[in-house]
Length: 264
Length: 269
Image 1 (cartoon, helix red, strand yellow):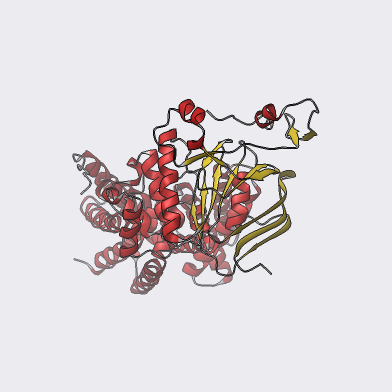
Image 2 (cartoon, helix red, strand yellow):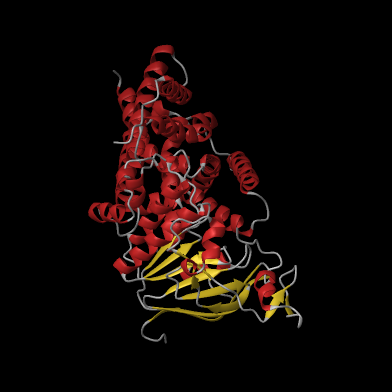
């Protein structure tokens, strides 16, 4: 097999590994539209990154975190409902990104950013992906219990002395990192699916939060492998093939007879 | 400075949320081992007061003081867990900050729900969920246990049973209890002090045992009423429909007074 396929597979697996637990958080906290909004703003991050000549991954992460903080502060004023706010921010940042790219006269394959470009992953990209995966995994291991606590009930967590605001920010930072990485794999418009579809499928197989997060990682890796194989065999677009593979896995899991969840 | 032996102290505490005064001029202190029942109609500001005690909201006026390093165990009024989280009772308890597997199985035994350890949280009945929430509050080895309407949605016998359990637990843990209830006349019999709240403290005093009063036992059809006590209000004022204070009508009798104290509050029964 050609080198670029191996690079693509390793990159996709790295992202899927970390998207599993983060995707579970997104599903638990009903944040999929929030994830989508952050993903849309990633394009603005790219434009600014190129204009200011800084590393694109860092530019995307900064842009996502900035947007998340703006969103939270706007949310607290309760002028308009959160879903309306998300819609406004998602599409204005996406439009701003496209306008900037045009104005700055940047030579950019827009399609690659919108739908992913997994087959052009370089070894530098791979290094970035695996460093980020290690950092995220370490943060998740250390802060797993507090992060889970705020997913279940923020008020109870706060009453027990967990630093809820800081944890929320940490979760947003982690999601921003996943978005920056997943952009290469499935593109801005499809990032959320890579997080939530494996997690939603894993819900059916899991009895504990931990097993759901891990199963989501495994199912995500399967989707990446299947998508790449389909893309190579049928010459289909890689990003969308991965998303459709994930959807097929989701459908298969739900077609299985329900596990008789008898308490032991 | 807070007096030794006093766990928390509120001095002239007021909370105003978006221009509306929720609670006003609250003076309240809780000592070691004391059981205080906080009662009042819906919308009286009970939950707001609890949030001040838990440190979730800061008073807009007055002072809130607590003993340094005070461990508060909090049992919320209700808890909704999304179906998307696969969570059994044991994992739910393990999320608590100081939980260890040994502690978790010990508190499960203490509230008599060891058999529910592997049940999904979403499949629990109302009474079972309350015991799980109580167990979670106990994991912190609390010096003060704050219970927000623990008897909500439980029938009166279940309520007596729960109050008995809380009384037992309090002896084991040697902790003080702040118990919130919207039931205006029926409180836990172990209560040392009842504080009646309707935006401000209306009255406070000691309850009488239900078991001393055959009429009550008959009224509620109680088999085991040991956990319950009645509280007779003694107000020097009444509230109009908007919750404003109006001086007591001179011709109004003592007995009527206890029932008319809350014009918009729900009555027990």
